[in-house]
Image (cartoon, rainbow, N blue to C red):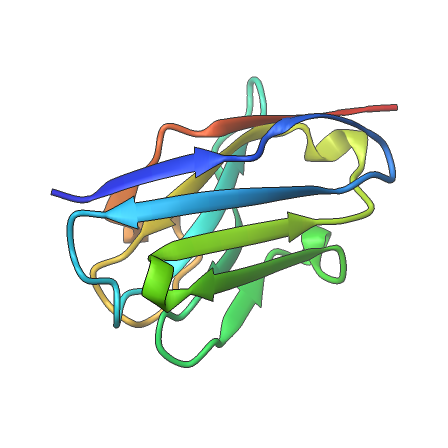
Amino acid sequence: QVQLVESGGGLVQAGGSLRLSCAASGRTFSSFAMGWFRQAPGKEREFVASINWSDDSTLYADGVKGRFTISRANAKNMVYLQMNSLKPEDTAVYYCASRKTPAQAIGVRSYDYWGQGTQVTVSS
């Protein structure tokens, strides 16, 4: 079984920064893609960013390009999401997710394991 635990959420003013962390355990992640998604109240869960576990290739949603950066530390089984220049519309519960394959994907259904989520609130 795979466990993903997010941390680092909180309340921040617009223009501020937060760094989310995702700790993975339960299996070897040496060749699995990881992703971050978010879900705002009344909206569907949406893709934010993903990273291939082996070669650092990344994908970003258009709305976060240039502001968010996904990274990972293989030896620690950790994935991070650095969020800068935050906007009120970034307010959501942020989820860490893992695939069983190296290839990245942006679809919610493409991911096999999910964390419980961490709340990010950006005030105007």
